[in-house]
Image (cartoon, rainbow over all chains, first blue to last red; front, top):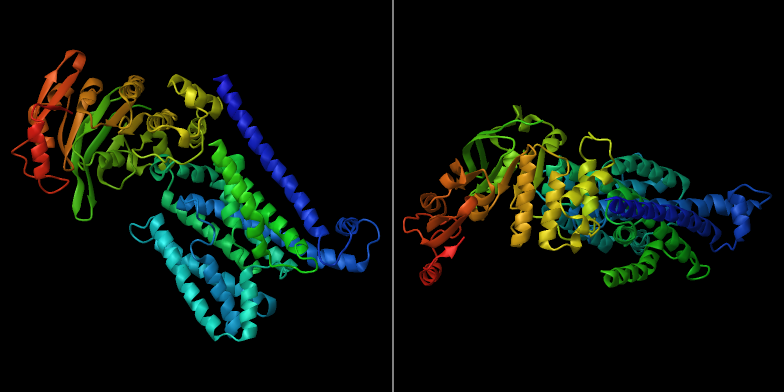
Length: 345
Length: 285
């Protein structure tokens, strides 16, 4: 018995250590992200500006504090939001192919953004930089509301939800195509750029809003880790353990929707992170959500941070949309991890 | 906590068809192992879920005088250990982790940490060898043993086991039934869905026979499993031969000519009739 307990505790310690290593790697990734960019600021100077050490040229301060830091922080926040939403979506739908945008949230957000960009139709009382993200967020919430309604239909299960979500995505996609058909070349270009997902629109108010959203959602995600892990043992087993599975699903879906809507509103559609981060984290720390949730959040942040660095250095002098780079970075890593798992199985 | 389980006038309706139609059971007492049997679609799992508070139902289910449906979900979960029929085959949690997880959800009554209690339980059940194996790497039988461990982990006074031996070889069937027997001997009420009536006769104190959502019998094995009961409940002509120590052998000679309904297909398949003519020497259920 002692041998079993010791072996189990060893595994848990190793998982905690891996989560700690992810935190360190993320800090390093953030520093690297701050130190890279088309402006060619030396690394030492960038770090000195960040830590307010010594005399740093004003231009460096502006680049670090007004451009690079909001972008780097936004990358971490968006990655964390997508990693967290992805792991919860896969548990809720009991489907390893699910990701935060599976149920049409991103398509709805794109439609909201397109209405502003193409027709100038947005939420009243808002103007300027906030109009596109606010409209995208509003439309994502609308999609989320419809999904919650679908879950309340008599006899609704996860399959109903997936079918409804896919149909919702198609509807939003069709409406978006119509708008694109009617759009001017200039609006079309803006829309295409928005859809690609880019960190270049990041600013401090956006960082503040997404931080607040993440901080509001995270405690609830952490609180439901036990129930979400029980759900992995099967719906009946979870019910037998006293979990109201329908309520758990509805609340998780609300969290996922808010995170996905927040992420997509500020940086556009970032594919792959919400799918790959949970899988990578799962391979590192297993399926118990008590380790998996922080690990997936950190992996998502790390993926986005790395993608942000690569987007700046891949083509010197040009900032590539980060949405393109996430797949370039994640895919080989993802395939390598799956191949390793296949060998060890 | 220990006390009688009372099931009174339980009724569950899906659509217009009652799946369970006013079932009353005689009181089930702590220390008893009771088998729940009946043909496919008779409502065994549905009744078990109703008893465990996992399905909405009319009527009353009380344990030691407390109505289970009036309790909070977590409070009820501490009283009822439920082992479902179907278990997921793809997750990578280890057997030990799955038991610890179950313990983590229960109100803490003991000082020992959950991992120590879980390891002790798995050793006691003879499952130490698979404790660190991921659930997805287990055979069907091992997975059922792991699910049994999860169900008994919180030491509930009522244990509901839905077909716990359906995927097991005879040795493991014996092991699981012996574990269920021991759980009953420790003062629990153990209700087990079983298709194998010979196994039910061997291990159960009483057998509940359900037919089309209604109670046909709840009696000791020698009174519940008779050729007349098999004809009425399963629609088969069968012989019941009693051996030593409560063991029985059931020989099915054919589908009863008096059978008026066929739940699965609406009428006996002529091919099945033909097959039964060939097998007329008798089939052991």
